[in-house]
Image (cartoon, rainbow, N blue to C red):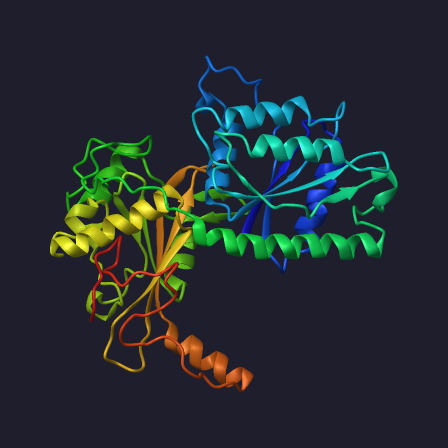
Length: 399
């Protein structure tokens, strides 16, 4: 499960931030928690556009994809902070990411009673029209005497408190599981597979379906190559090294941007006919409508569904097994949404590989035996994150 934690204070030093960070680290095997700040959100003003705030866009995009939200609220004058109230106003006026979202409330304060009054007030706000969150009843975690509650490494000192916090979190996990059955996916609008809406990185001077798209765009943009160094988030590599790294991956990788333009695939050294998702060099840069031109209309609808589902945040990924009569092949496709820094949809990366050797290695290494399981020839798998369809970005089908 993926949760987001909302720090209910805009202060630089916050015990509620410390509480969320402790939850993130100490219970990382139970769920993934991303801690989000509200320190740069402007005071709510209905005459202004919420999208002008990077932090509000980030909060919105992260929350709509999260399985649940944990809010850590301080208590100011028997209620929540003005900063948190302003965030809730913004996120219940034109957009409604809390709607039908499971929410757990925690809080830390200097005094014995924790944040009991603030939490009671916050529950009323979250139940208001326009917010309409599913707040877990009861299950209150109130951390009093916060100054003495943590050690120098940010860990909660009291074992009894840790045990109670774990019980509350386990209850929330169960609650999310129940509430998720009531979740209604956001409606999927018709996808533009013809790349008619250029984005900031679209090179409009070259037609996407030009078979020489890569070379022509490289010349226009002055794209670097060879031993030119590229600074990445956590390293510096040459372009040649990046290419070697990507080609050596034991997967077929594909990238299509949020304008539905097919920009890249690796493993160019392979014979296309031996690939699990057949691709050819002239497809790089093409419109997805062109890449999939040979598919029947019903399969094209599946392509649009995959893209729309990921774009909307209805699912974080979509997985499928492509039917194959060869018992040595489990043709596995994973479509993963990618995101810009503000959390908005940036396109799809697709991973294609034969899962069978990995499965055989695991069973042999652990001495286990596979009993039952998915039908390897029909493509049946987990219904929540699967789709029996053609490759959504490269047009792969059964081989």
